[in-house]
Amino acid sequence: MLLNCQRLAESYDQVTRWLTRHWFPFIPATAGLYVLARLAPHAATWDQEAEVLLKIKAAGVLLVSGRSFHLQERQMGWFRIVISVKPHILEEALRRMERALNIG
Image (cartoon, rainbow, N blue to C red; front, side, top):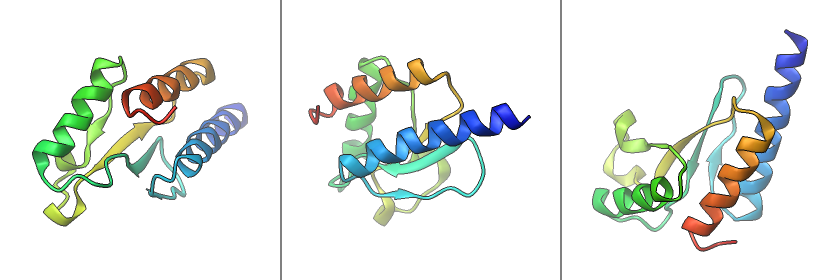
């Protein structure tokens, strides 16, 4: 159990460092297996949010958009990132997202 907690903490740190480095807003988590981050901060419509999601999916990374969680229109551009994956998989996913979002 302790090892699992340590691994989740490391994954959380990895994701939040990546988000901070790329200036993406996120909601700090106190517990859980996900981080909610605004990967499309300039999305003004649900279609624009969906376009970003399609780019990320085309890069081979599966995320869930905030719209799936019934966020309101003024909260467009948010995505749920799962952190409970092996470190090398998470690292590759972040690299792919950089390419998809043209930030890397």
